[in-house]
Picture (tube, rainbow, N blue to C red):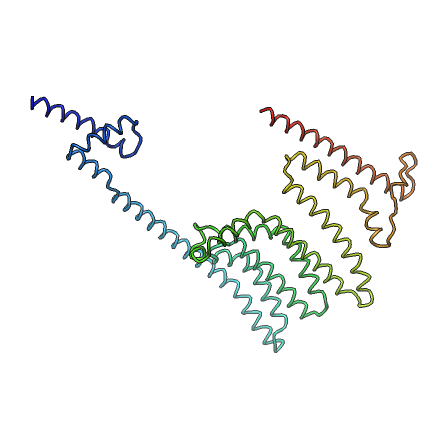
Length: 361
């Protein structure tokens, strides 16, 4: 009887030991799991084997070794990037030193040298900065590029004279920001707003600040539009500063009014496309209709801003005898309006079709 019990115990242990790897990985069935647990309560030998299988020391060592290998590789890449950045900086430093010596030797002072210096800074902003920056490389490169351009304008304006510096700088920031502002925001928010890449920075910010970063990530478009709106006004003010004092007010009134109308239209299209809770075809219809009306009536709107009178351009529509400038202009405006309305109508129908299919699916 004792021999039979021992044979049964040995057979049970053999089965349980076959199931132990599946039990440890939690991939066995519920019945097998209960069977293993009941057996482990009474069998010290199998329990010891289970404890040895659950030992994660090897896993911890593998993870530590992997982390060390990745850290060493990251340090190597940083050193290589720093070395390449240093080489590029040294190459850019050669013409700077040559121009410094020439300007001092010939001109007995420094004047045009600063133009060369700021021009080299532009080259460094797109070569050295991305190599030396550890985080937000794209954002830092774009900011340094715009800053270098502004410094180039400043050194050139000081050298040649004139009051064009503010207009040129505002125009450059406005134009580049149309593409660069969203990229800069995303670059910094992604680099400094997540625990994986932010490093010590996110160790110091509070939970509320982390939520603010996440909120800002969803508002990149709005922030970019606000930035562009600010700089187009600054551009108009800088352009007005270039005018004669007697003509400054006469320039700024229609210029700022036209910019305001343009921004109202741009913000309307942006808010519709970004926040209107409708499918893309409805948004396309709304944007196309706005574009058609703007194409048709924009001349009348600007004439209203300039001289305070609505011209009623469409009253000159005549497709049978388009011989005058007013008639041709009116025909083109009406044609653009009709095309916009028709295209918007097609988009609207497609929007209803898509909504109907989604509701029935």
